[in-house]
Image (cartoon, rainbow, N blue to C red):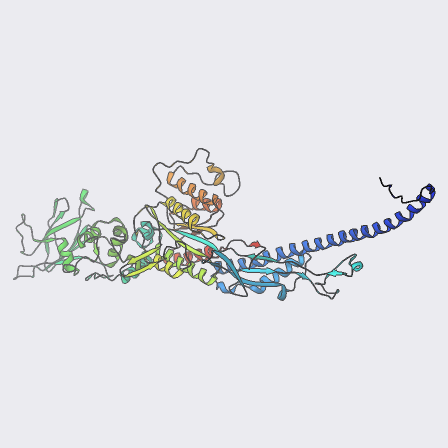
Length: 628
């Protein structure tokens, strides 16, 4: 068994041992003090670096967002004022970055530290990429730095409190923030109901002057390719010239069938006139004098349509009744002959010349315009727009400037043009609605074909424009199933949007929703007042018991709950502006009212401005910290 070695020899006094240990503790204490000092200085400098890095990053974030907001503000100004979207002021955005960084206590060099680029979507890999220096700019990178060895400079390296002790008196720091304007996946929901041509009919006389309406009708008629015989813009009544004067006792008589009256001229004095009304009743005017006269129904027959007459002048006679003169009839055959329509086929797949003639004789809108019983191009245009507006009825109305539909088409064309110039990566889809709704993605019309090739939401603006321009008011059907349009657009955006794009809907109408699923009712917990309090006073600004209206609003709220922003547009006097305002307010969008004005030209201008504002309403900028 071995004996352990002793550190001190046996018998060493305790005092000697304690004295020896004191020297060891002093050395250890000195070493520990150095270590503690090193840790302390490291902690102080580390905190200083972290604080400065945080300040740089916060300044970079704020500056990048502010610069991007300056870009979006200029885009919106361009849209609202009709300016060239490419006039976006990058100089102003750069200066805004400098000012906001300065406000946050951070210096940036505007030329070196602020970079602009273009963010685009790569459909091949489904990723967004950025090309710095490429235009148009929709991405801003701000990189404040403190790396200047000149310690008097504003971007000098960060001095350390104790770095001198290890030979590192200063350190360089840099921060980076990237802010971008989100691209949008937009579905424009367009009203294709039949009322979208109302402003081009005599029914609009309560809104527009007759000269304005007829000027528009002239443009519509000039756009048609159909053979309309001798119909002209100088609309005329049916005029029948009687048998030539024979011998000394006969008379030459001319009868014009006006609106609920006949105008008679004769080469001899009139003796009697017998009127025949549409129900077969006859009324005789006896004891006449003079060679001319205007005759209409009396008593209960005042205002009744006259289908024929007998005129006694000189010794002419018909033998149709006691003392009856020459007979004249207002027949379809007579109208067709006078206006050169008897040997011309009706030009479209639905309708006939007889239908048009009967329309001219009986329509109340024509009566209000003073054109009832006249025949001409204005009344023919009114006939098409009021009764033959479907594409399968009149397949070329799409090419005519009928309103407000044409204003919508022109506005949408401007909208696409704005997006093309903006070039921020926005993609667009189209949903139309009337009795139902549908996605507009293909076109095949009289030899004109177009397709989005299965991409329901696309940046192929030319094809989108071609598809929408080949449409007409009431293209498919008549009514206004607005809620169905919102539902279809929501489905498109949820199932066909790109990852990283802002889903946006634009809802347009000229009227009141009047179609809904038969079994629809609001859920029991639905708080209508909460959603429709758009002035914030705690009370509903719009309460409706109309289930079609409720269905639209319900579908819009469901869309917004899935992240969709909805902008709305109301066109003309009959649109439900309260509903459209409520939807925009509840769904994060804006509502634009297009009142229409006194002429279609004013409507056109307002619609163009409205679509420009919508196109320019780009989403707020977003920060991202890693971007190629």
